[in-house]
Image (cartoon, rainbow over all chains, first blue to last red; front, top):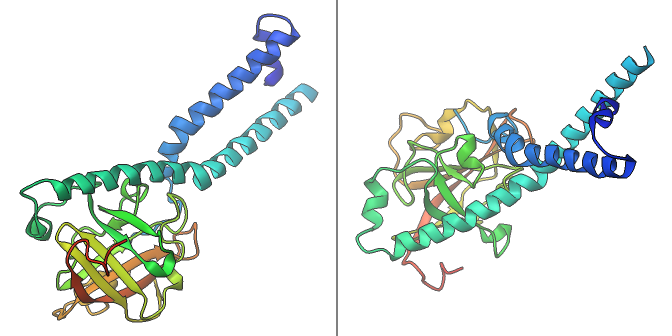
Length: 51
Length: 217
């Protein structure tokens, strides 16, 4: 999986490392800002209500 | 075969990292989100109380909008700065910003049962220490009309999640006519789960004007 991404990134090893880091950070940001807020409101974590 | 197995391994490691990041979000991210929301709710309550034309009568009989703040809750036994804005409703979206008033139960200070549910963990862990409350501990509810001082009457009780009797106007005695103004605090135990609820009940002992020394923060 990571090799597949690595082979598709342009540039030399140094550039690719930077690019891969940016890709991973973008994915983490998407998870943290969009996916996790949604998931935490829709998964039954710590249910406190009654009825 | 080897690259196939490596691919599987990479996917599994990635899933592990995502789950670890989600745990971090539940521990800290939800707290940050709730902290921001609490600041916003506090200033919303402040401007509501400062605006002319609004009164306790409006809180007693007006329509409560889910997600909007209606009062502050303070429990000195949980810390001098322990204070949260209570919002209307107890859906996940509402409990994510702070403790929520159980829709359909009475309003602050009214005869009957003012029921408030809150997260034990996540969203700033508002009700983390509620199960440690003891008889005699004070619970203050600050509203537009003043501060209602409740006193915890009994040790916490553990109930099933479907036990709506604790929400009855006379807590624990559905169908009976209430004679006093009760407060019921609800959270879950064990934390993180949905297995059972802990309930703490108190009774109104005093009504103080807003901003009085005894009721002041």
